Length: 159
Image 1 (cartoon, one colour):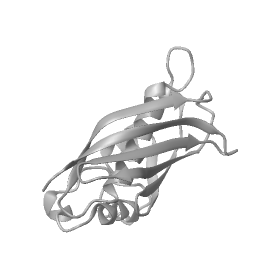
Image 2: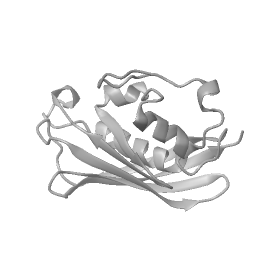
Image 3: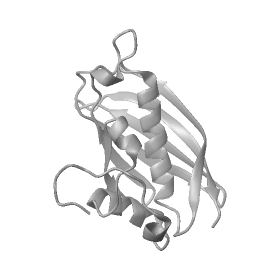
């Protein structure tokens, strides 16, 4: 796609991903062979690792994410948890199979501020069935403190 350091954003075409497993699809995004989804630019996060049922994202909250009280809006953390849990589930799927979130819940453990700096968001599959996958996610600051944690249930969408 591009050799510059600015990531490209967009949605891969069906032709680009039809033969890729979920893990291969996500790795292609990390490698820059496919664009990162536009939500990654909007919410200031990026995927940095993918494994079997696991993903790691990095994110940087900033002033554009503040709520009226001056903290980072809880919707940002919830979106990040929904993203890492969904991608963890996606990493387990074969080519041509999709997913959709059914439910995501989060608990906010510590305030997230515009100056919190780089955080890590981890997603991991807890249980995988034929039609339902459960995953957990957490957001961790540079000192290793949990800022938020939660779970998601996703529905596997057949070919």
